[in-house]
Image (tube, rainbow, N blue to C red):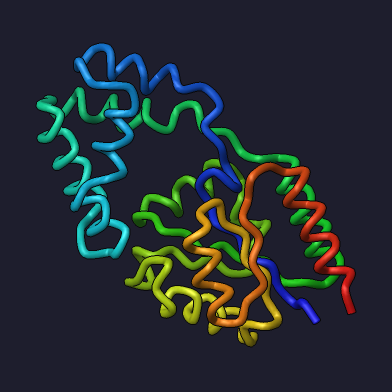
Length: 201
């Protein structure tokens, strides 16, 4: 029987609806489309920050250095990069229904310690029983240890949990451990799949 549902954060609980703040910086800095994303979220310092081995401030200083920005410009990029992120209210409403039905809910996300601030900003903290952030647990998905950490927080076996993530590789790792897995594409399909799983004997 399913006793808990675990959700990824980025592109699941929140989504970037308008790329304009990012594309404006790409135009200003002469970057190719997607270049800002590659610099901010696809570099060595980002991995170090997600593993908790680099502070958020040091990480953003490195981003600014790579982009050739002043500290003031770096602060503006930092604010603008997430400016168009919005909470996925439809999914959050469903999560509340899951909790009302007596199941636990949790977050398992690869992110820096900055995620706590975002969860508070989007009023998400109160919708989850447990929060597992890679920077706090010291390991990233798809490592088995990341899933084991959140299972320990929930005090549940893998087979009693469903994991929802937008990255297939993370779902594959969860399923290899014995968890149920759903690759998130959109709210409609995700909620339908979850509803069927939770209704199964």
